[in-house]
Image 1: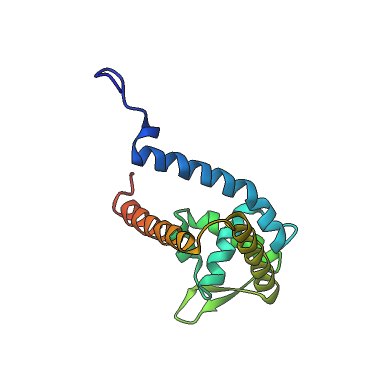
Image 2 (image 1 turned 135 degrees about the horizontal axis):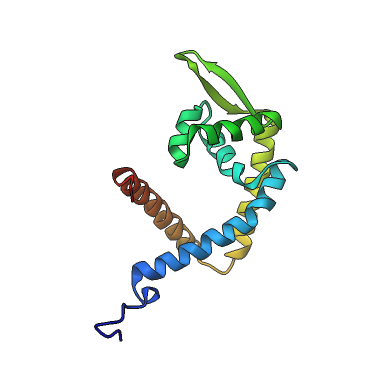
Length: 161
């Protein structure tokens, strides 16, 4: 037990334990990101895969929407989009409602690469969690979705956070 002069070990609090597990989860996800990106295209940078996934799930998105969603600057997104375009994975067309913007979709090659990478990730997850009850897998997915939603709401309300 912590004394009055010693702070409690964060690993022994629910939020501290969550922080630790999220840190491990992010580290593991980062280490497999390069393999996932390679499934899409041999020259795709691992950091661009989430961008590609968002475009796949939201065809016709705009660069400014991507920047806001990922919490990065437009210049960063613009560079990544230029690379995805150069690799033939996305298609950009002028937004008919605002000629300053572009609507971004995946090309056939981009769709095929993304679906291959996604299928590989689903297979790997299924194998890793083969001993889990599917109700537990569904519960984990729901809790992670809830965490993401609440985190985004908190982040948006606390930009200095």
